[in-house]
Image (tube, rainbow over all chains, first blue to last red; front, side, top):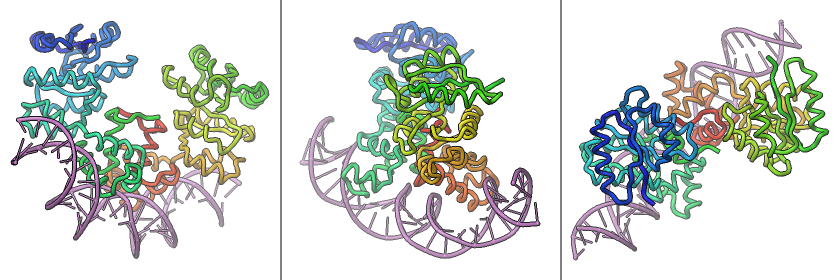
Length: 216
Length: 216
DNA sequence: GACCGTCTCCCCCGTGCGGGGGAGCCGCGG
DNA sequence: CCGCGGCTCCCCCGCACGGGGGAGACGGTC
Protein backbone atom coordinates (compact mmCIF):
# COMPACT_ATOMS: atom_id res chain seq x y z
CA UNK A 1 0.00 0.00 0.00
CA UNK A 2 1.31 3.40 -0.96
CA UNK A 3 2.12 6.28 1.37
CA UNK A 4 -0.73 8.79 1.17
CA UNK A 5 0.10 12.47 1.41
CA UNK A 6 -1.95 15.61 1.97
CA UNK A 7 -0.37 18.83 0.72
CA UNK A 8 -1.00 22.06 2.62
CA UNK A 9 0.46 25.25 1.19
CA UNK A 10 -0.98 28.57 0.21
CA UNK A 11 1.03 28.70 -3.01
CA UNK A 12 -0.49 26.62 -5.80
CA UNK A 13 2.92 26.45 -7.43
CA UNK A 14 4.48 24.75 -4.45
CA UNK A 15 1.60 22.33 -4.22
CA UNK A 16 1.94 21.48 -7.89
CA UNK A 17 5.67 21.01 -7.52
CA UNK A 18 5.35 18.73 -4.53
CA UNK A 19 2.60 16.78 -6.24
CA UNK A 20 4.71 16.27 -9.35
CA UNK A 21 7.72 15.14 -7.38
CA UNK A 22 5.80 12.82 -5.10
CA UNK A 23 3.44 11.38 -7.70
CA UNK A 24 6.47 10.32 -9.69
CA UNK A 25 7.06 7.73 -7.02
CA UNK A 26 5.10 4.51 -7.32
CA UNK A 27 4.82 4.12 -3.56
CA UNK A 28 3.63 7.66 -2.81
CA UNK A 29 0.18 9.01 -3.54
CA UNK A 30 -1.01 12.58 -3.08
CA UNK A 31 -4.59 12.28 -1.89
CA UNK A 32 -5.48 15.90 -1.40
CA UNK A 33 -4.48 19.56 -1.17
CA UNK A 34 -5.34 22.49 1.04
CA UNK A 35 -4.49 26.16 0.70
CA UNK A 36 -4.60 27.15 4.34
CA UNK A 37 -4.39 25.61 7.78
CA UNK A 38 -8.06 26.02 8.55
CA UNK A 39 -9.01 23.47 5.90
CA UNK A 40 -6.62 20.84 7.18
CA UNK A 41 -8.62 19.20 9.96
CA UNK A 42 -11.69 18.17 7.95
CA UNK A 43 -9.48 17.01 5.10
CA UNK A 44 -7.36 14.90 7.41
CA UNK A 45 -10.51 13.42 8.93
CA UNK A 46 -11.89 12.56 5.52
CA UNK A 47 -8.78 11.48 3.64
CA UNK A 48 -6.81 10.02 6.54
CA UNK A 49 -3.42 10.59 4.90
CA UNK A 50 -0.25 8.99 6.25
CA UNK A 51 1.66 12.23 5.93
CA UNK A 52 0.71 15.89 5.86
CA UNK A 53 3.22 18.13 4.11
CA UNK A 54 2.47 21.41 5.83
CA UNK A 55 3.71 24.88 5.07
CA UNK A 56 4.59 26.92 8.14
CA UNK A 57 3.64 30.37 6.99
CA UNK A 58 0.07 30.41 5.82
CA UNK A 59 -2.96 32.70 5.99
CA UNK A 60 -5.86 32.04 8.37
CA UNK A 61 -4.13 29.34 10.36
CA UNK A 62 -0.38 28.89 10.25
CA UNK A 63 1.43 25.58 10.24
CA UNK A 64 2.11 25.64 13.95
CA UNK A 65 -1.49 26.06 14.98
CA UNK A 66 -2.65 23.66 12.31
CA UNK A 67 -0.18 21.05 13.54
CA UNK A 68 -1.35 21.51 17.09
CA UNK A 69 -4.98 21.32 16.02
CA UNK A 70 -4.50 18.14 14.03
CA UNK A 71 -2.59 16.38 16.77
CA UNK A 72 -5.05 17.46 19.41
CA UNK A 73 -8.29 16.67 17.67
CA UNK A 74 -7.60 13.79 15.31
CA UNK A 75 -7.44 10.20 16.48
CA UNK A 76 -4.40 8.35 15.22
CA UNK A 77 -3.07 11.50 13.58
CA UNK A 78 -0.95 11.53 10.43
CA UNK A 79 2.77 12.28 10.45
CA UNK A 80 3.37 15.94 9.87
CA UNK A 81 6.19 17.16 7.69
CA UNK A 82 6.82 20.85 8.03
CA UNK A 83 7.66 22.61 4.80
CA UNK A 84 9.56 25.86 4.86
CA UNK A 85 11.39 28.25 2.60
CA UNK A 86 13.99 29.49 5.01
CA UNK A 87 16.34 27.44 7.05
CA UNK A 88 16.46 29.76 10.02
CA UNK A 89 12.73 29.91 10.33
CA UNK A 90 11.82 30.13 13.99
CA UNK A 91 8.35 28.94 13.06
CA UNK A 92 9.79 25.61 12.01
CA UNK A 93 11.15 24.92 15.44
CA UNK A 94 7.90 25.92 17.01
CA UNK A 95 6.08 23.56 14.69
CA UNK A 96 8.45 20.75 15.56
CA UNK A 97 7.86 21.53 19.20
CA UNK A 98 4.16 21.40 18.51
CA UNK A 99 4.60 17.82 17.44
CA UNK A 100 5.60 17.85 13.79
CA UNK A 101 7.64 14.83 12.80
CA UNK A 102 10.09 16.30 10.36
CA UNK A 103 10.99 19.32 8.32
CA UNK A 104 11.65 19.96 4.67
CA UNK A 105 13.20 22.84 2.78
CA UNK A 106 11.36 23.86 -0.36
CA UNK A 107 14.63 24.15 -2.20
CA UNK A 108 15.51 20.55 -1.42
CA UNK A 109 16.20 18.26 -4.34
CA UNK A 110 13.34 15.98 -5.41
CA UNK A 111 15.12 12.91 -4.10
CA UNK A 112 15.47 14.55 -0.71
CA UNK A 113 11.82 15.47 -0.64
CA UNK A 114 10.80 11.94 -1.43
CA UNK A 115 13.20 10.60 1.15
CA UNK A 116 11.84 12.91 3.83
CA UNK A 117 8.27 11.83 3.14
CA UNK A 118 9.21 8.18 3.35
CA UNK A 119 11.15 8.77 6.54
CA UNK A 120 8.32 10.35 8.46
CA UNK A 121 5.84 7.88 7.00
CA UNK A 122 7.86 5.05 8.48
CA UNK A 123 7.88 6.86 11.77
CA UNK A 124 11.61 6.44 11.84
CA UNK A 125 12.64 10.04 11.77
CA UNK A 126 13.13 11.86 14.97
CA UNK A 127 13.86 15.51 14.81
CA UNK A 128 14.91 17.82 17.53
CA UNK A 129 14.70 21.54 16.93
CA UNK A 130 18.15 22.46 18.14
CA UNK A 131 19.79 19.66 16.23
CA UNK A 132 17.96 20.51 13.06
CA UNK A 133 18.82 24.15 13.47
CA UNK A 134 22.53 23.67 13.76
CA UNK A 135 22.63 21.00 11.11
CA UNK A 136 20.59 23.05 8.69
CA UNK A 137 23.11 25.82 9.08
CA UNK A 138 26.02 23.43 8.85
CA UNK A 139 24.81 21.91 5.63
CA UNK A 140 24.19 25.27 4.03
CA UNK A 141 20.50 24.48 3.92
CA UNK A 142 20.90 22.58 0.75
CA UNK A 143 20.82 19.04 1.96
CA UNK A 144 17.82 18.49 4.13
CA UNK A 145 18.25 14.76 3.94
CA UNK A 146 21.70 14.86 5.44
CA UNK A 147 20.41 17.04 8.22
CA UNK A 148 17.57 14.61 8.79
CA UNK A 149 19.89 11.66 9.00
CA UNK A 150 22.34 13.39 11.29
CA UNK A 151 19.63 14.55 13.64
CA UNK A 152 18.34 11.02 14.03
CA UNK A 153 19.55 9.16 17.05
CA UNK A 154 21.30 5.85 16.63
CA UNK A 155 19.71 2.77 18.15
CA UNK A 156 21.98 2.84 21.12
CA UNK A 157 21.53 6.54 21.71
CA UNK A 158 17.78 6.12 21.56
CA UNK A 159 17.97 3.33 24.12
CA UNK A 160 20.05 5.52 26.40
CA UNK A 161 17.64 8.42 26.01
CA UNK A 162 14.69 6.20 26.86
CA UNK A 163 16.41 5.18 30.09
CA UNK A 164 17.39 8.77 30.81
CA UNK A 165 13.72 9.64 30.43
CA UNK A 166 12.93 7.09 33.09
CA UNK A 167 15.21 8.85 35.51
CA UNK A 168 18.15 6.47 35.49
CA UNK A 169 21.67 7.68 36.26
CA UNK A 170 24.59 6.90 34.00
CA UNK A 171 25.67 4.06 36.27
CA UNK A 172 22.16 2.59 36.26
CA UNK A 173 21.93 2.85 32.50
CA UNK A 174 25.31 1.13 32.21
CA UNK A 175 24.10 -1.71 34.42
CA UNK A 176 20.89 -2.03 32.44
CA UNK A 177 22.62 -2.07 29.07
CA UNK A 178 25.51 -4.14 30.37
CA UNK A 179 28.20 -1.70 29.24
CA UNK A 180 30.66 0.53 31.05
CA UNK A 181 29.73 3.89 32.46
CA UNK A 182 32.21 5.52 30.10
CA UNK A 183 30.28 4.11 27.20
CA UNK A 184 27.06 5.50 28.57
CA UNK A 185 28.70 8.88 28.99
CA UNK A 186 29.73 8.80 25.36
CA UNK A 187 26.17 8.05 24.27
CA UNK A 188 24.73 10.64 26.61
CA UNK A 189 27.06 13.27 25.20
CA UNK A 190 26.01 12.31 21.69
CA UNK A 191 22.37 12.56 22.64
CA UNK A 192 22.89 15.96 24.24
CA UNK A 193 24.68 17.20 21.14
CA UNK A 194 22.03 15.93 18.75
CA UNK A 195 19.21 17.29 20.83
CA UNK A 196 20.91 20.58 21.49
CA UNK A 197 20.49 19.91 25.18
CA UNK A 198 22.82 21.28 27.81
CA UNK A 199 22.24 18.52 30.34
CA UNK A 200 20.24 15.35 30.76
CA UNK A 201 17.28 17.24 32.13
CA UNK A 202 16.95 19.26 28.95
CA UNK A 203 17.36 16.06 26.96
CA UNK A 204 14.48 14.43 28.80
CA UNK A 205 12.38 17.54 28.24
CA UNK A 206 13.16 17.33 24.52
CA UNK A 207 12.19 13.66 24.61
CA UNK A 208 8.80 14.51 26.06
CA UNK A 209 8.24 17.56 23.90
CA UNK A 210 9.13 15.74 20.70
CA UNK A 211 6.94 12.79 21.53
CA UNK A 212 9.94 10.48 21.76
CA UNK A 213 8.52 9.43 25.09
CA UNK A 214 4.97 10.08 26.20
CA UNK A 215 3.58 10.64 29.66
CA UNK A 216 1.87 7.75 31.46
CA UNK B 1 -22.43 26.19 42.09
CA UNK B 2 -21.81 22.99 43.99
CA UNK B 3 -19.06 20.48 43.32
CA UNK B 4 -20.60 17.52 41.48
CA UNK B 5 -19.28 14.04 42.23
CA UNK B 6 -19.64 10.65 40.57
CA UNK B 7 -19.08 7.65 42.83
CA UNK B 8 -17.51 4.53 41.38
CA UNK B 9 -17.16 1.51 43.64
CA UNK B 10 -18.30 -2.07 43.45
CA UNK B 11 -19.42 -2.10 47.04
CA UNK B 12 -22.83 -0.48 47.57
CA UNK B 13 -21.94 0.10 51.18
CA UNK B 14 -18.97 2.24 50.31
CA UNK B 15 -21.00 4.19 47.79
CA UNK B 16 -23.70 4.82 50.37
CA UNK B 17 -21.14 5.91 52.92
CA UNK B 18 -19.44 8.30 50.54
CA UNK B 19 -22.80 9.64 49.43
CA UNK B 20 -23.90 10.26 53.00
CA UNK B 21 -20.68 12.01 53.91
CA UNK B 22 -20.56 14.14 50.81
CA UNK B 23 -24.24 14.98 50.58
CA UNK B 24 -24.02 16.37 54.10
CA UNK B 25 -22.03 19.21 52.61
CA UNK B 26 -24.03 22.04 51.07
CA UNK B 27 -21.41 22.66 48.40
CA UNK B 28 -21.06 19.04 47.28
CA UNK B 29 -23.56 17.10 45.23
CA UNK B 30 -23.37 13.42 44.32
CA UNK B 31 -24.77 13.22 40.80
CA UNK B 32 -24.38 9.52 40.09
CA UNK B 33 -22.98 6.13 40.97
CA UNK B 34 -21.37 3.27 39.11
CA UNK B 35 -20.52 -0.23 40.28
CA UNK B 36 -17.66 -0.92 37.90
CA UNK B 37 -15.15 0.85 35.73
CA UNK B 38 -16.83 -0.07 32.49
CA UNK B 39 -19.85 2.08 33.28
CA UNK B 40 -17.81 5.15 34.06
CA UNK B 41 -17.22 6.65 30.63
CA UNK B 42 -20.85 7.00 29.51
CA UNK B 43 -21.81 8.28 32.94
CA UNK B 44 -19.05 10.87 32.89
CA UNK B 45 -20.14 11.93 29.42
CA UNK B 46 -23.74 12.30 30.50
CA UNK B 47 -23.37 13.72 33.98
CA UNK B 48 -20.16 15.69 33.48
CA UNK B 49 -19.16 15.58 37.17
CA UNK B 50 -16.42 17.77 38.58
CA UNK B 51 -14.93 14.88 40.48
CA UNK B 52 -14.96 11.10 40.09
CA UNK B 53 -14.34 9.18 43.30
CA UNK B 54 -12.98 5.97 41.85
CA UNK B 55 -12.21 2.69 43.57
CA UNK B 56 -9.00 1.06 42.40
CA UNK B 57 -9.93 -2.58 42.69
CA UNK B 58 -13.08 -3.28 40.73
CA UNK B 59 -14.49 -6.02 38.50
CA UNK B 60 -14.60 -5.67 34.71
CA UNK B 61 -12.44 -2.56 34.52
CA UNK B 62 -10.24 -1.51 37.42
CA UNK B 63 -9.63 2.02 38.55
CA UNK B 64 -6.37 2.35 36.66
CA UNK B 65 -7.79 1.42 33.30
CA UNK B 66 -10.96 3.39 33.98
CA UNK B 67 -8.88 6.46 34.85
CA UNK B 68 -6.86 6.08 31.69
CA UNK B 69 -9.99 5.58 29.62
CA UNK B 70 -11.71 8.65 31.02
CA UNK B 71 -8.72 10.91 30.57
CA UNK B 72 -8.10 9.64 27.07
CA UNK B 73 -11.59 9.74 25.67
CA UNK B 74 -13.42 12.51 27.50
CA UNK B 75 -13.00 16.15 26.59
CA UNK B 76 -12.35 18.40 29.58
CA UNK B 77 -12.23 15.37 31.88
CA UNK B 78 -13.26 15.46 35.55
CA UNK B 79 -10.80 15.35 38.40
CA UNK B 80 -10.23 11.81 39.52
CA UNK B 81 -9.91 10.90 43.16
CA UNK B 82 -8.64 7.38 43.68
CA UNK B 83 -10.27 5.56 46.57
CA UNK B 84 -8.49 2.68 48.21
CA UNK B 85 -8.66 0.45 51.26
CA UNK B 86 -4.99 -0.18 51.77
CA UNK B 87 -2.28 2.38 52.08
CA UNK B 88 0.42 0.35 50.40
CA UNK B 89 -1.68 -0.38 47.38
CA UNK B 90 0.57 -0.48 44.33
CA UNK B 91 -2.52 0.04 42.20
CA UNK B 92 -2.97 3.48 43.70
CA UNK B 93 0.37 4.66 42.48
CA UNK B 94 -0.34 3.27 39.07
CA UNK B 95 -3.63 5.11 39.03
CA UNK B 96 -1.91 8.33 40.04
CA UNK B 97 0.60 7.75 37.29
CA UNK B 98 -2.31 7.19 34.94
CA UNK B 99 -3.42 10.71 35.66
CA UNK B 100 -5.55 10.56 38.81
CA UNK B 101 -5.49 13.82 40.75
CA UNK B 102 -5.55 12.57 44.30
CA UNK B 103 -6.03 9.60 46.54
CA UNK B 104 -8.24 8.81 49.46
CA UNK B 105 -8.24 6.09 52.08
CA UNK B 106 -11.62 4.57 52.81
CA UNK B 107 -10.90 4.67 56.49
CA UNK B 108 -10.34 8.41 56.38
CA UNK B 109 -12.51 10.55 58.61
CA UNK B 110 -15.50 12.27 56.96
CA UNK B 111 -13.87 15.68 57.25
CA UNK B 112 -10.82 14.36 55.43
CA UNK B 113 -12.92 12.87 52.68
CA UNK B 114 -14.74 16.12 52.15
CA UNK B 115 -11.50 18.01 52.20
CA UNK B 116 -9.95 15.72 49.61
CA UNK B 117 -12.90 16.15 47.26
CA UNK B 118 -12.76 19.91 47.56
CA UNK B 119 -9.00 19.88 47.02
CA UNK B 120 -9.10 18.00 43.75
CA UNK B 121 -12.19 19.91 42.62
CA UNK B 122 -10.26 23.15 42.99
CA UNK B 123 -7.46 21.62 41.01
CA UNK B 124 -5.11 22.67 43.74
CA UNK B 125 -3.94 19.28 44.80
CA UNK B 126 -0.90 17.81 43.24
CA UNK B 127 0.03 14.31 44.19
CA UNK B 128 3.17 12.46 43.43
CA UNK B 129 3.26 8.73 43.96
CA UNK B 130 6.50 8.56 45.87
CA UNK B 131 5.57 11.42 48.11
CA UNK B 132 2.15 10.00 48.83
CA UNK B 133 3.63 6.61 49.51
CA UNK B 134 6.10 7.77 52.11
CA UNK B 135 3.68 10.18 53.67
CA UNK B 136 0.91 7.62 53.86
CA UNK B 137 3.30 5.37 55.74
CA UNK B 138 4.53 8.21 57.88
CA UNK B 139 1.07 9.21 58.96
CA UNK B 140 0.08 5.67 59.78
CA UNK B 141 -2.48 5.82 57.01
CA UNK B 142 -4.94 7.53 59.25
CA UNK B 143 -4.71 11.07 58.09
CA UNK B 144 -5.05 11.25 54.37
CA UNK B 145 -5.59 14.96 54.54
CA UNK B 146 -2.27 15.58 56.18
CA UNK B 147 -0.59 13.47 53.55
CA UNK B 148 -2.39 15.38 50.82
CA UNK B 149 -1.36 18.72 52.22
CA UNK B 150 2.23 17.69 52.72
CA UNK B 151 2.51 16.27 49.27
CA UNK B 152 1.29 19.49 47.73
CA UNK B 153 3.96 21.85 46.53
CA UNK B 154 4.04 25.40 47.79
CA UNK B 155 3.62 28.22 45.34
CA UNK B 156 7.30 28.89 45.20
CA UNK B 157 8.21 25.25 44.84
CA UNK B 158 5.73 24.89 42.01
CA UNK B 159 7.26 27.89 40.27
CA UNK B 160 10.71 26.40 40.64
CA UNK B 161 9.52 23.05 39.30
CA UNK B 162 7.94 24.70 36.28
CA UNK B 163 11.26 26.34 35.46
CA UNK B 164 13.12 23.10 36.09
CA UNK B 165 10.76 21.49 33.59
CA UNK B 166 11.82 24.09 31.07
CA UNK B 167 15.41 23.04 31.44
CA UNK B 168 16.71 25.95 33.48
CA UNK B 169 19.68 25.54 35.80
CA UNK B 170 19.58 26.68 39.40
CA UNK B 171 21.42 29.87 38.52
CA UNK B 172 18.98 30.61 35.70
CA UNK B 173 16.00 29.95 37.93
CA UNK B 174 17.50 32.26 40.53
CA UNK B 175 17.89 35.01 37.95
CA UNK B 176 14.36 34.49 36.71
CA UNK B 177 12.81 34.57 40.16
CA UNK B 178 15.17 37.28 41.37
CA UNK B 179 16.44 35.33 44.35
CA UNK B 180 19.77 33.81 45.33
CA UNK B 181 20.94 30.47 44.02
CA UNK B 182 20.96 29.16 47.58
CA UNK B 183 17.28 29.87 47.82
CA UNK B 184 16.65 28.02 44.61
CA UNK B 185 18.64 25.08 45.91
CA UNK B 186 16.47 25.01 49.01
CA UNK B 187 13.31 24.93 46.91
CA UNK B 188 14.73 22.34 44.56
CA UNK B 189 15.61 20.11 47.49
CA UNK B 190 12.07 20.50 48.85
CA UNK B 191 10.63 19.62 45.45
CA UNK B 192 12.84 16.56 45.16
CA UNK B 193 11.81 15.40 48.63
CA UNK B 194 8.10 15.89 48.00
CA UNK B 195 8.26 14.19 44.64
CA UNK B 196 10.44 11.37 45.83
CA UNK B 197 12.88 12.29 43.10
CA UNK B 198 16.60 11.69 43.35
CA UNK B 199 17.62 14.51 41.04
CA UNK B 200 16.11 17.26 38.95
CA UNK B 201 15.73 14.95 35.97
CA UNK B 202 13.48 12.60 37.92
CA UNK B 203 11.58 15.62 39.21
CA UNK B 204 10.92 16.82 35.66
CA UNK B 205 9.81 13.32 34.70
CA UNK B 206 7.40 13.31 37.63
CA UNK B 207 6.16 16.71 36.50
CA UNK B 208 5.37 15.36 33.05
CA UNK B 209 3.95 12.07 34.28
CA UNK B 210 1.70 13.72 36.82
CA UNK B 211 0.42 16.25 34.35
CA UNK B 212 1.98 19.12 36.30
CA UNK B 213 3.47 20.18 33.00
CA UNK B 214 2.27 18.97 29.61
CA UNK B 215 4.18 18.48 26.37
CA UNK B 216 3.92 21.12 23.65
C1' DG C 1 42.01 -2.01 0.50
C1' DA C 2 40.52 2.33 2.42
C1' DC C 3 36.96 4.71 4.47
C1' DC C 4 33.21 5.77 7.63
C1' DG C 5 29.87 5.24 11.27
C1' DT C 6 28.75 2.83 15.39
C1' DC C 7 29.80 1.01 19.73
C1' DT C 8 32.94 0.27 23.15
C1' DC C 9 36.27 2.01 26.73
C1' DC C 10 39.91 5.13 28.72
C1' DC C 11 42.16 9.55 30.54
C1' DC C 12 41.83 14.35 32.81
C1' DC C 13 39.30 18.14 34.61
C1' DG C 14 35.96 21.68 36.20
C1' DT C 15 31.63 22.52 38.14
C1' DG C 16 26.83 22.29 38.84
C1' DC C 17 24.18 19.60 41.71
C1' DG C 18 22.28 17.73 45.87
C1' DG C 19 22.68 16.55 51.08
C1' DG C 20 23.53 18.17 55.57
C1' DG C 21 23.43 21.50 58.65
C1' DG C 22 21.91 26.48 60.48
C1' DA C 23 19.49 31.03 60.61
C1' DG C 24 16.62 35.17 60.11
C1' DC C 25 12.16 37.28 58.51
C1' DC C 26 7.35 37.44 57.80
C1' DG C 27 2.33 36.47 58.31
C1' DC C 28 -1.13 33.65 60.03
C1' DG C 29 -3.66 31.32 63.63
C1' DG C 30 -4.18 29.24 68.12
C1' DC D 1 1.85 36.08 72.84
C1' DC D 2 4.11 32.19 70.76
C1' DG D 3 4.36 28.68 67.37
C1' DC D 4 4.48 27.24 62.72
C1' DG D 5 5.01 27.20 57.87
C1' DG D 6 6.83 29.55 53.92
C1' DC D 7 10.58 32.15 51.90
C1' DT D 8 15.05 33.75 52.03
C1' DC D 9 20.15 33.09 52.47
C1' DC D 10 24.55 30.97 54.26
C1' DC D 11 28.23 27.26 55.19
C1' DC D 12 30.68 22.73 54.00
C1' DC D 13 31.19 18.67 51.32
C1' DG D 14 31.16 14.74 48.01
C1' DC D 15 30.17 13.19 43.67
C1' DA D 16 27.84 12.48 39.49
C1' DC D 17 27.81 14.90 35.45
C1' DG D 18 29.43 16.74 31.17
C1' DG D 19 33.42 18.49 28.02
C1' DG D 20 37.69 17.52 25.92
C1' DG D 21 40.57 14.57 24.13
C1' DG D 22 42.03 9.58 22.26
C1' DA D 23 41.62 4.68 20.79
C1' DG D 24 40.42 -0.08 19.35
C1' DA D 25 36.95 -3.36 17.12
C1' DC D 26 33.44 -4.30 14.01
C1' DG D 27 30.58 -3.94 9.85
C1' DG D 28 29.21 -1.86 5.78
C1' DT D 29 30.31 1.03 1.55
C1' DC D 30 32.96 2.87 -2.08
